[in-house]
Image (cartoon, rainbow, N blue to C red; front, side, top):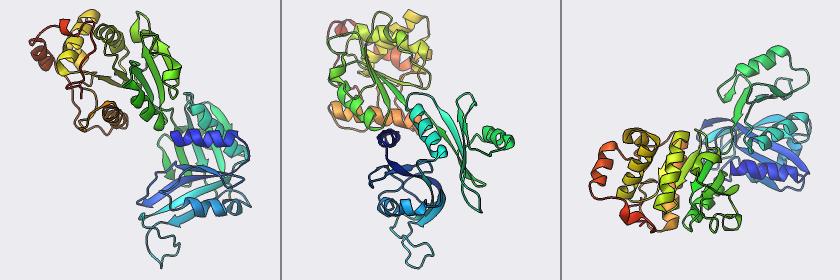
Length: 370
């Protein structure tokens, strides 16, 4: 997603010459289909299509490749001097690259769709690859299935066919992809330990919102990489527009504020919800928030990751941020393995150790926070 931002940024500067898209992989490859490289007229570029094996070669030859229009070029990254398409650099696969001039209506429509996706307007793109005497043709569909762009000469039947192609990838001479929006992360707490979390999320190209009830902490100068920095009121997270495919991490270190925000956050049911703090503190928060909204503790525990983050080891704000980002990334990509969660039974066990008075009006300890 960060590369998409860089590609759009270079394109908006003007002078872009060639767009290269990885459309097919046989064997092993450092990048997956959909990876892109935008090359400027002066040889500058944004994005990558390999682990560094192909960029210099493709950049050097791209303008020549598209002298007669878009083409598909094949490269082998297997270490084999006798291969028919030798480019042996040890990655272990064969890749097909779509190379197209950046000034065509088809390429401009794609880049515009990429730009819109960065602000939440997702799209599906179907590209008929050039070959066998036929040129590149493309359809761009909006979230609602409306046709945003269609190449001249495409029949209504082909456009309708594009609407029915749901799965991404290349098949039968067509490359299908969904331009999804960046992952949204809500960092609910603007303390110093939130800074590395915001920075790491920004490196991944995520859209980050920082929110806190303390105006002296929640201001943009402290979080220059965040999309938004918001001071929340008594309604907690209710006014932030959190959706079910978002991720949220609660880390204000104020027991009262965490409790109020958690009670407002649970009904929004973001896809990932992490709670920073020791098990005992988190258990008390969950128990009290459940009572505030009339839920059972078990229902709350189903939605909450606590202690937040994968158990990677290490200490300090940066290590905690890495553990949190790793867990959010794994969860959102459907790759989560063993994740630490509270249960109604463990909450009851922790509550038996004592009440919340030790956490009121003080900063929470980071002990056992991960």
